[in-house]
Every structure is written in structure tokens, then in C-alpha cells.
Length: 297
Image (tube, rainbow, N blue to C red):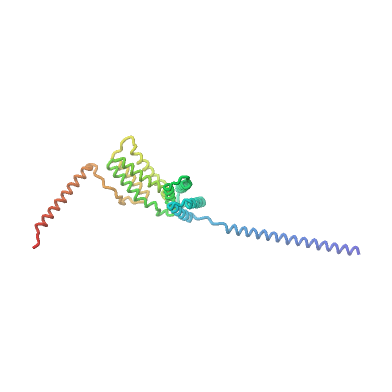
């Protein structure tokens, strides 16, 4: 009897141990399934929240759109929205790569424009003109990045050429005061588009025009007077540099004012005009006399 009881108790203990082991296995599998499920959900969330990086072209397009919107807010005088949009511009610039669209110099120029704009908008003193100038620079720069073949800054060629023509007139008259005034206008316009030019033009092309501007600006304060012929030569260099900068052909009409001959000067032109006027007047008198002699019947 005791032996039989011992066997029964031993069997019950074995069953209890086996049941406990099975329960542990089931719990472990359930726990693993729960972990796997949570990982898969987390992986799914991570995959869902992961946004593929923007291509350089898409980033340039977004930057162009944001810069255009910001420029509109500045013109409207909406400082709050302009500052919000400037933050968006900064975020696009920081999180994007523009490799293949511009050079290192172009990226640096764009960065400087954004920094200047944010500084202007963050200033305590309200300065709408400064805001508009900074926003215009950004708009031109972003447009140049997004439209490298036909950027908006090319429209400035007519204005730049007019300033060069004014300098040419001043050189012909040897008027350094007018030369300086025309050069300052040209410099102001060029400063507005220079970052955009750096983005879409080779560095050597930009450096060539920069060097010419620097040299021309030093002419009025030169230690020795610069003659008329030399001034005209300097203008010729500037016109060539501008044509290369804007991608214009050499034989394209420059609409420059015809200059008086160096040998005869202004008096030669006056004499020629007097002779031409005399010939025209004589021809008119002859025509009128013949008309009066002929009378209809």
C-alpha cells in the first residue's frame, strides 16, 4: 500500500512538472511573439515616418517657391509671415544637397544671402528697404539655382548696358564726375544680382567682371589723370566682360552713342552738321522754286 501511494504521488509530481514546463514554454513563445509584434510595428512606424531625401532639383524648386513667397510677404509688409517663411527657407537649405546644380562658391553665396536676410528680418529697427533688398537677392539666387539656363537675373543686362553706355558718354567728354555716378548705379545693380550670378556662372567669369569694376572705381581717385583714350579703352573692356557674363554675342548691338572722331572732336561734328544742314536747305529751296514755276492750267 505505501508503495502504491508512493507511485501515485510520484506520478502526480511528474505531471505537475511537465505542466509547468509547457506553461513556461507557451508564455515564452507568447512573449517572443509580443516582442516580435512590437518590433514589427515599430519597424512599420519607422518605415512610415522615414521620408526619402529630396533630390537636388526638387530641393531647388522648393527653395525657389519659398523665396518667392517670402518676397511677396515682404512687399506686403507682413513681417510675421516673412520670418516664418525665412525659417522654412533655412530648413530647406540645411536639409538639402544641391550637388550638381552649382559650385562650392554658389553654395556659399546662397548661404550668405540667407544669413543676411534672416539678420535683416530679425533686426529690432524696421527697415522695409533693407528687407526688400535682402528678399530680392534671395529670390534671384533661388531662381538662378532652379532655372540655371534662363534665370531672372539675365533681365538686368539692359540696365547694366545702359550704365556702361553712360560711362562711355562720360569717357568721351572726359567727365569723371558723371563717370563716378554711372559706375555707382552699375555697382548697385550688380550687387543685387551677384549672388545669383555666382550660382550659375563659372568663378573665373565672375572674377573677371569683379576685377574690372574694382579697377574702374579707382579711376577718379587715381594719382595721375587718365586720358580720354584710356577711359574709352577701359569701357571697352567692361562691355566685353558684361557680354561674357550675360552670355551675349560679340556682334550684338550695344546701343552705344556714336563717338566723335578723335582727330576732329566736337568741332568737327558741328562743322559736318552745318554743312549737311546747308545742303538740305539748298535742296529744299530748289525744290520749292521748281514747284512755283510749274502751274496747272
